[in-house]
Length: 386
Ligand SMILES: [Fe+2]
Image (cartoon, rainbow, N blue to C red; front, side, top):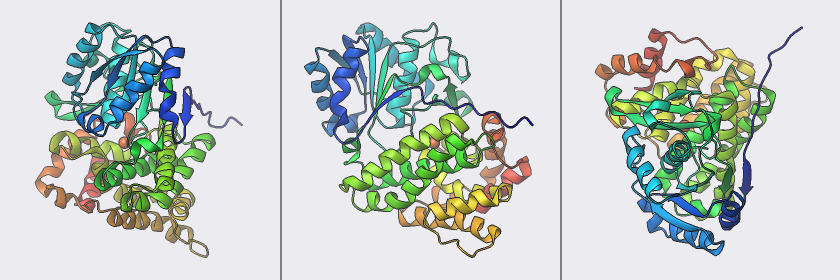
């Protein structure tokens, strides 16, 4: 009997651990870089992390040009000036240091340095023909998992929506995951990015493309978020918690790189596009309501999610255990201070139709959802989250 055939990729070298940021110079040199284009943001630069990176590169004889005009939740138009700066500087290596915005910008620029045309031409799945110049990504939040995913997300003003460049050719050559880089992230950002990680892990674990290999990473990411997110928000200097969250983010990234996200990210895109709600908060607001809707698809897996988030499920029926997963998720987001309802971020019932209309267009993510969702059901999920 033929079963489901799963494809699983972790194509990138990963340097992981406290202090691993120091390896960037040696890696850059190994990749043949002589002139690095460092993509970062003003906050990361102000924290001194960019200067530290430049010292590591220069110690290995690599010159650098720094670009910090990265937009938060970057627009697709923001790539052209960044690319122009990289071309002017004659860079042969891209190093992205920052959160998802800096890393997604880096992915697009590294790709465009080796491909024709502009960023807009590559919005979609599988449109990138070849790898660009070598690239290294170093996350300073935990996180988007962008250091390992084949996706780069951009705001497209013309359609007021987020669109993605999706290609294995934009995965970096090396991901350097150093939890020390995340010690200064403020509590609100730690909370929002941590809930994004939880969304990745839950969506990948319950995706119809889930596989036993991706499940290992997804379930461990859920367990790590359940164990460490509260502490990382309460005390950002707690290295054990930051280390746990750095791993959670990375594992969540591996899980979605292989199994994909689904209804949460699909419904969250228009919240970001039409109302400019940040990625992590948008996902967090929707996650428990999507879990309640999707639980029916696999009670056992949703029960395991509840367990991984610390809920005792022994002796419970499969249905009750599954329901505990969404409850645990609400409790976590409440504890870390994230808005609980769409109404708290300015969404009203009159906005719902347009949100549903835009969300239903994200067909590549709906295809991964474990339960079929009609526009009416999508509307129902949003109304429950309101
Ligand atoms: Fe995400």
